[in-house]
Each structure stands twice: as structure tokens, then as C-alpha cells.
Image (tube, rainbow, N blue to C red; front, side):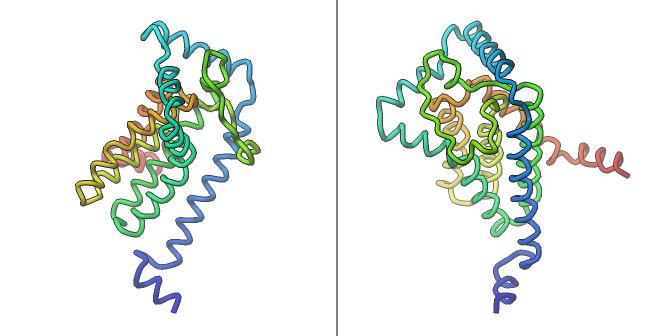
Length: 239
């Protein structure tokens, strides 16, 4: 009976679903552990964080992220919404989006999954070589309401550059916009990346420069995965 359910509802049966879950959760666990051990050099991370502050002050003459947080803190419902988005957009929403595409739009699954994985690998190099403290830890006016809990056992608090919340939100938004058929779903996913970018800044977890770096990572990852010429070049090099 279980096998019949798999044949009826799963694109490639239970064995392929198990393989995909192993890839996904195996990568997630390994990634979190490596990220947590990547760099604990707090002085370097704070130096890089203050460098981001100086760049933004030079370019925009103010910290717009601080304005966002003050605006949100005066509206309880909005404050709850951005907090929920920060905590759930990176794992819950991405995980459910990948699962839905696997089940309902399977032809788009492999490139979607690979784009997410590649973006996170690129981001990990950023955390290793450019550890950066988030705005909430820099003492420049942000309220630090962040609580890691059990996540702190494997998390690196100095992983602000690039913002993988921003990268993954852009990949999810682009792919879900392309595969959804209802206009309201397309509208939601078209707006999703911008909402996540606002949320991570309003919670004091990322500067807009971190978000720009995350957007670049997403574009780079999708270019590699979706561009046929680049894929053929990698295949030729492997052979």
C-alpha cells in the first residue's frame, strides 16, 4: 500500500524522495557545522562590520536600516511579521518551497535545488574569508532582540556578509513566480524577495550592503546552474 501511494503521488517513488531528503538535510547539517566553525575571530568580524557602516555612511550619509527598525518597533503587528519572516524565510519557507516544487513542478526541481545549494556554498566562502558582525551587535543604535537558543550551538554570529536570507529569497521568488499559475501566487512570490530584504534589515540582522552581496550571490548561482554554456564548460572540465 505504501509503495502504491509512492507511485501515485511521488514523481519518482519513495527511493528518490529519500535520496533528495538525504541530500538536503545532509547538506544543511554539514553546512551549519562548517559555518559555526568557519571563523570565530570576533575582532576581525567587528572591524568588517564597522567597515560596512563607514561605506554606507559615505554612500547614503545615514543608516536606513536603523530607520526601518525604529519604524517597525512602533507597530507591534509589523514587528511580529518581520521577526517571523527572519526566523522562517531561510529554512521553513525554503524547505517547503523546495518540497512543493519537487512534488508539483518536478521538471523545475533539480535546477532550483542546485541553485539554493550553490548559493549557500558561495556564501560559506564569504563567512570564512570575510567574517562580519551584524548591525545588532555593533552598538550603532540597533536594538538586539536576537535569541539563538539551540541554534547557537552550530551557528556563527559573524555571518552577515553576504546575506543568504536575501540570496535564497531571490531564488525562491524567481522560481516560484515562474512555476506558479495563479496570478495571486505570482504576485506574492514577486514581492517575497523585497519583503525578506526589508525584514532582515528591520530586525537588525543585515545591512543593505549585505543584502546586495546576497543578491549578487543568488544571481551568480542561478547563472551557473541555468546557463547551458557554463554547465557544458564544467562538464567538459570534469571529463
